[in-house]
Length: 76
Image (cartoon, rainbow, N blue to C red; front, side, top):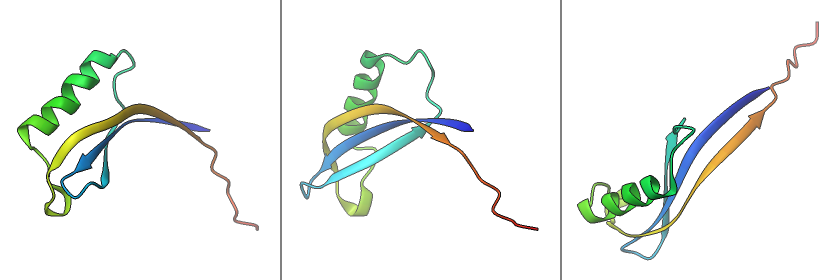
């Protein structure tokens, strides 16, 4: 069993489509205020332009934890 954690941030672009950015392994003690600051900074500084479209608004942010169980399917 393997746990992974991501901070998933969703934005609206200038074409009115949703775009997601993720950060692997965010700190355990990350606060909502810190996340809000980061998404606002990404939008205000126009840091990313996926597919040539500017990000114009933050839509949501969440921490996603995934529990993965790998299986060895090699039968000998």
